[in-house]
Length: 237
Image 1 (cartoon, rainbow, N blue to C red):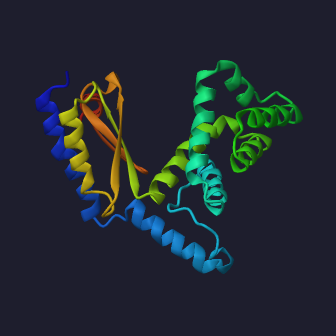
Image 2 (image 1 turned 45 degrees about the horizontal axis):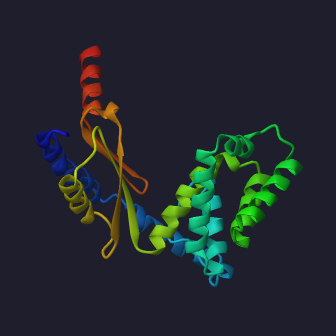
């Protein structure tokens, strides 16, 4: 079991760490995304009638996810596509042969696209999902599909007013501890947002927790504190 003392000592640190960034005037992910979206529309009036992602994410995976969001939103198919992309990622992670097929860089592109076409037909995926998977395959980005799916999920959640928070602890949280963490996080997301907490267990952090909220990452683990002490010992002033 997680030490009750350590856990409840960490909670105020979590609130303090998040609050400090806000008090220092650091633009939050949500404020920045809203501003970036406004500037994008203003600089390109042709996009006014295009469904726009609710968040501005960065990186190759994010660009693919944003394109998929726009294509899905146009057809009012966000929920269906989100489910299908999750199914494909799950299959890739649970079927070794399928994962090797997806990520094999030596396979001829024509052969891979033919295989993807058969896979999509067999799975009876929507046109949007099928076309997207084939585009990702044609561009040689299937190895990044899981990252793309994570970004797409984040966009879909934001469109529903949900904020995903990933909490990692050395041992599983019980129901009471999870409720306390969720309550601690509610005050640091946009008003009227629903906090969706996803928990992970990693014994390597020793104690405390790490928290990921969107693109924010807070390390309140005992491991990080131990490393700081070791650094001070190894590099005395």
